[in-house]
Image (cartoon, rainbow, N blue to C red; front, side):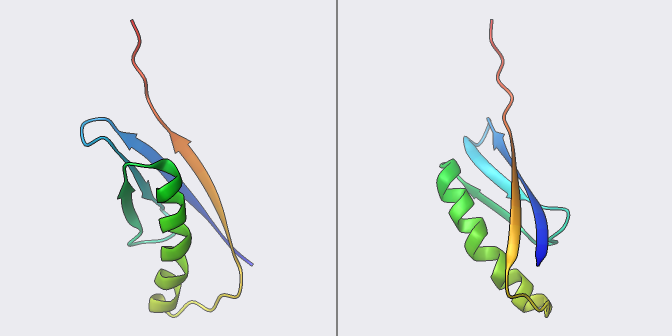
Length: 72
C-alpha cells in the first residue's frame, strides 16, 4: 500500500486552505473549506498517480494541518 503525507495550511491573505505534498509532485490544491479540500485531495491523488504511471490499488493519506493564529 502506498502512503503519502499531505500538508494542509491556511493562507490568511487569500482566505483559503492549501494542500501540497513533497511526496506527490504536482499536488497543489486550494479551497475555502477544510473538509472540501480533503475530499478534493482524495480524488486528485489517484489521478496524479495514474498520470505518473504509478501502480496503485490502495493509497493511505496522512493529513497534517497547520494554521497560525495571532491573538492579543
